[in-house]
Image 1 (spheres, rainbow, N blue to C red):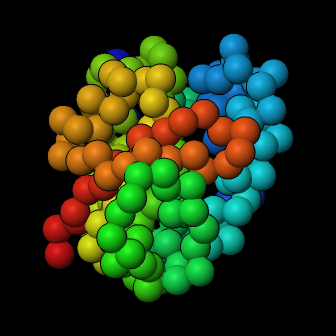
Image 2: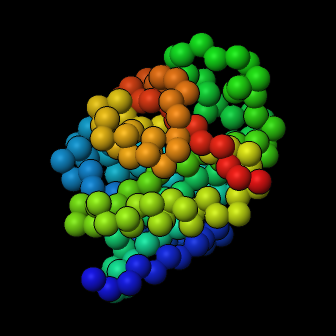
Length: 180
């Protein structure tokens, strides 16, 4: 297998990578694209929202110049709606954002042929490398316990149950402290 090349991009670079992200998403969600929440248009909309938030960063992994996965996220702002769908009681200070406290990892995807090879972990670690926030949070579909177990093996801990949009599936919210 060729070496994995990681490409880090910011919000200003979204035009350069958007189609690659959409193509990987379409491959991974091919059997669910007819669901409104998982449609390509809704994914593209969520991607655009993320890129408008300060701290947006994306990492795209390539093997032999073919995109095989990516991750992206942004820094939660003081007025974020990220925690609005949290269905598990949490102390208010746990969900208070300052615009510098929490990095939200919105997507981490790797094509099927490259799962179980360490590509996802390398993309993840590159995305979080040198982040100034004190913690990172992400959502994983409740129906994917093996994905949750993978994140837990990387040190994430369960934070609560979340329904981020009315038509979204139920998610588990996970949290990981970042080294300062």
